[in-house]
Length: 119
Image (tube, rainbow, N blue to C red):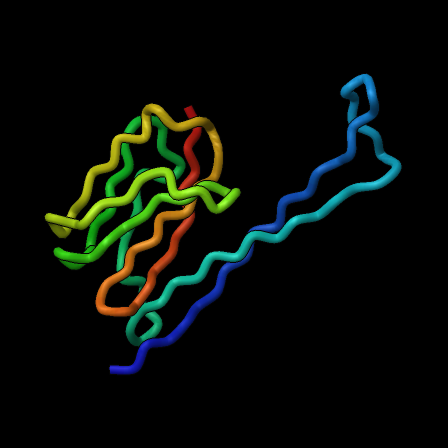
């Protein structure tokens, strides 16, 4: 089976702020975050729910023995573990409201999906 790649993009825009902390319309910055899903036959190899989440995230359809990482937008690894069940429950109640990436690696194949924490 050959692996294939599917890309999705999210665009985030921000307005600069004045010295007083107010948004200004004079210029804006635009950032694009791209997540990729590696799978077989264009099918995602994991499912993440609920998304957005507040206290717990479930990752399903993950091979036992795979490793997963939760990564913030700065690239910092927030948590990492070896999958011991095809459905993995993550406690995210201690995380700040933000977008994170969940990356699963199994036998050299890396799958990355984004998850939003919103309490």
